Image (cartoon, rainbow, N blue to C red):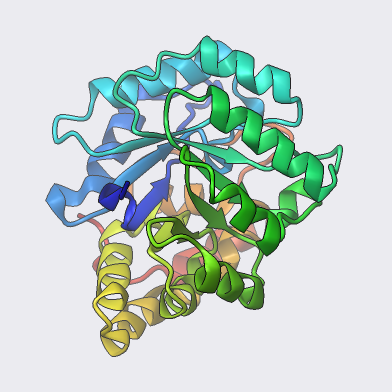
Length: 297
């Protein structure tokens, strides 16, 4: 079964906060409108990924954010919801206790901290796929989980009918090449690294789940669409607009940088929850200097 709604540009939505560190729902609505960009923006939304600061949101807050996104989606943009963790049974419990009506897929990061073996990672995802009422997208992000989901494990999991793709943020293009070469035809290889989107598409990838698309959805949509059409010259032209600002997004941890960019665009405040802190004055100045022209929609 194919899932064309996840080909192109997805955005890992941030969660806006006010000065009291509460969820700022008016700002979240502005963000949804900004990323949709009157139809010129992203192809789908990812709710409660790492960029959404899921680690510091309470379970009830996560449910409220998902419900708000569903209720403020008049164009029926596809929604992917993040449910993950390092306790397999706890993740399965979340599946049973989350209203997933209006959601099209689950994104689940590989278990962090306890560093399971490849067999353990396979067993974890297999249990999730068996129990999930929705298709599952794997998420390999060794920089956060301290363990890599190998190409062999990914390809083994790709045989499960309820696992439809992987968000690859390993930064290892050789690993991505192996996945692309041997994966089932309909299995989605999605970039989890904004700057590696074009190389990954050239290897057979189908798009990206992006951080920067929160701030610059039109640029990202144009870049990804051009690459998928084989026009890498046009895709590079868009990429070059954001190449200078990209490293600043992660210098003081994600989503500190992109929230600062969004504050400059008057979409939401730059507030984050501890232990993260808002961008330093030095970082604020450098982000402002690197902002692409004419990106506000």
